[in-house]
Image 1 (cartoon, helix red, strand yellow):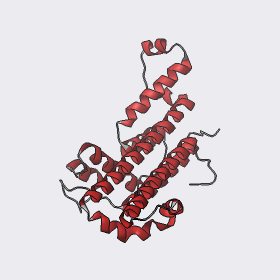
Image 2: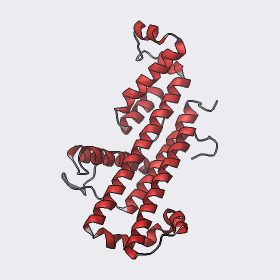
Image 3: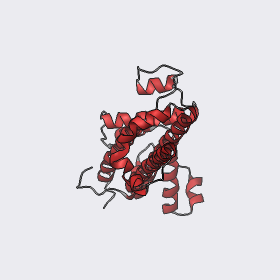
Image 4: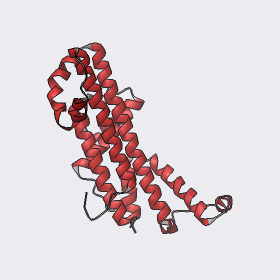
Amino acid sequence: MSGKVKASGEFKAFSESLKHNLDIIALFLALMMSYLDNIGTDENKFRELYENQLREYDEDVRVWLRMDKLEILARWIFEVSITRSVEAFDYYLSQILLKVFTKRPDIFRASEYKAEVREFLEAGSVPEFMKRYAEKKVNELSYMGLPKIIEYLNNRLGLGFDTKTSSFQAACEIVEVRNILVHNAGHVNKLFLQRTGRTDLVEGDLYPLTLDYLKDRFKELTKTAGNLDVVITSHFKLNQ
């Protein structure tokens, strides 16, 4: 992120949420190591785990992942963490867009934005009407999916966000992973393959989840949100 543009409160909340999720994973793995080794837990190890010691447990993790019940537990915590993290990203995006539409009502002057007189009368005032209209637009956008939302912001509002970066592509993929976790029991489907372009997976495969994958994708998701925050905050002059 550029030091010239102050991060929004919405982004800071999202970033903290992802760090919290990583802390939970680290705690979970530390507890499992403690259980398997039949030793007492060490709070200092918990604090250091995800920062610089998590990789040291990779071999041990592979050992206990071969145990059926522990494999189920590990996948469950990974799935929950991905789902919660993507939902946190979706919430960040909806909140920053709500701020845009609320602080920049001039956006609604474009011919595509039309409202009935009834909606204005029900609101009772211009500020309340704009607030409701902003919420309505954000709700509509939320169903479009990340690539389509950015396409809309770029084409309709001149945002100029670069969608060709590897970070953005990785962010889009983890969103699709979340979708198959929630809607297809974690199994790859045709829609996932179409949207991600993955050729190393086939329809019906259980999507592989590893600790390294989570760490990498959370990093890219945070990077994408940070880049997007800079562009949106700067383009719409939200700090002014």
